[in-house]
Image (cartoon, rainbow, N blue to C red; front, top):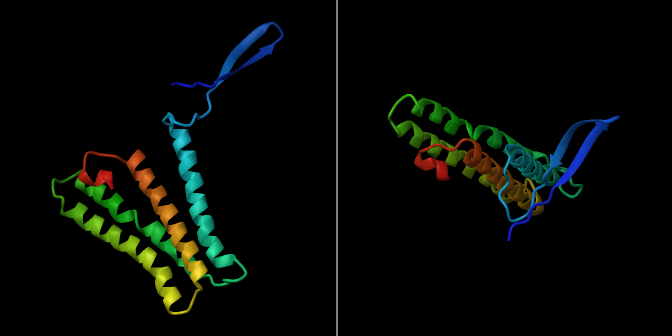
Length: 160
């Protein structure tokens, strides 16, 4: 069963028809066909993740801004993979890629460990930890989606 929804808008000045604008919105069950739709979806998911992290800091019952340090891990985690892909294209050695995956996984584990350690030491409350962990999941799924859709190559790590 295939569904297509379309609408036509005709722009005319006097008797002259300038053109027809055809709008085809996203229909559930079908693949998103344009890069713009995917970028909007990734931006929306990233903003939800960041909202969860900010809520973990800003809600009146928490009032601690320590969970905001996970943003540093968000920025640092893709850097080893990006650098390794740049250098791996110039040489046949995969040791650079292996090291990059190791460093990336270490940064991701640290991002999940930071709110847990802060909760165990009593610096932040458990609710802030849960919000930060949920935000971490959303942000890293967004980063994974970006790398799978826009930076796919023939390496084995393209599936991660």
